[in-house]
Image (cartoon, rainbow, N blue to C red):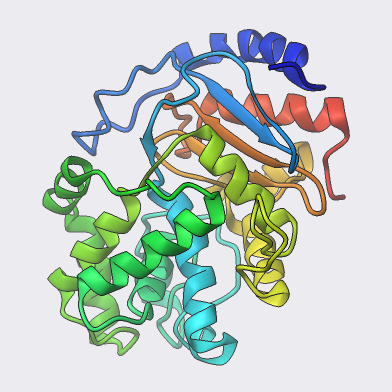
Amino acid sequence: MVCRYGDDLKLMIEEVRQYTKEGKVADYIPAISLANKSDVAVAIYDGNDTCFSEGNSNQLFTLQSISKVLTLALALMDHGEEIVFSKVGMEPTGDPFNSIAKLETQVPSKPLNPMINAGALAVSSLIKGSSNDEKLDRLLSFVRELSGNPSISFNKDVAKSEYDTADLNRALLYFMKQHGVISDDIEELLDFYTKQCAIEVNCEDLAKIGYALAHQGEHPDKNYSIVPTEIARLVKTFMVTCGMYNASGEFAIRVGIPAKSGVSGGIVGAVPGSIGIGIYGPALDEKGNSIAGMKLLQLLSAKYRLSIF
């Protein structure tokens, strides 16, 4: 496929691939630890064509923390800002994404933002549905519509692997239940959360999701709104301030694109009014972000002047 990004992307991929040697695959989730750390792939969607560079453009990987963006949007659509932000705050944090420290010192004891694990768990408890199956069906329908891909599902092996090793998230849930942030059954909520994180996509899916968010919630292939404009704005703001874990501040300075990463190595980018970006590179830096993906976004931002600042 020929497009304005094609040759540039190929060169950029080769430039950043060297950094995968310095990264580490997320081995604390057994099913993800099997990924090839040298993989790097990217898709850019501009509303007309999707342009792939190196690697297998159909390689599936799980959303992991990228799902936090989507559940936040859905929870806001279900309940509105007042209810959602009574359970979770709006402030960035310099602590790791799975830290419990701020929960112990905050008054009231609610998570600082929806992009850390505690906040995402609280948001997941707000998704409407009479059962986990119904909640997951609603979330999958939402992801399918945002991406334009009706075949998206979740990886049962990854979900089980995460559920079986989720003791730290259990601790966060028990702490929040003790302090009235959530009232759900812990294991039921954790079952939904791990399935949410195990939703599988490829780079093209992510690029189209990014495009939809970049264009105020519009369907990536058709001219209608999936996410209300104000909710799309809120979500992108959290992506800028909290989307790259405790590297978000440096990322905003060096890249300046609303983005969200996941420990599977995925990154979704949403350049307001412009393109959507989907990246996969499972070798992670010490903060849990794709090491090659971060370098690639820095190159893309500089080359095409994508920073919103």
